[in-house]
Image (cartoon, rainbow, N blue to C red; front, side, top):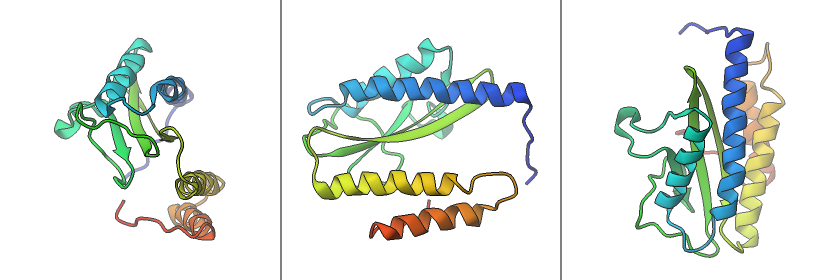
Length: 167
């Protein structure tokens, strides 16, 4: 597999796409509350992505029916939004989403508390974020994927957590 080197303009398009997703996440945080369906979150997320002139790159990818992945509680990744899945107090939800701007993709995820959550759930969110940043310290030119993943696993273990190797 060849590495594709991006131009400054291409990198900027990816950066803008990710900044747009950051704004979308901030807006979703305002509506993620007990009583909302994951499908409603999907609709709002798609609308925001399109308002930025982006295309939701998950929608219709290999038949995927939504613009976001909405993974609630023990659903690790790629949860499919549904009108029937109504968020409840104490749950956590991870939103994974991508946006394409002029052919260049941004992809990001964020986890939210639904109302008041347990200390254990809060610790898991904290561990995941700390592990992400530990990996980012190694995500630079000259380093290898195993260095990034090793830093992530080490940080996760320091919180008493583990990583899911299948993904």
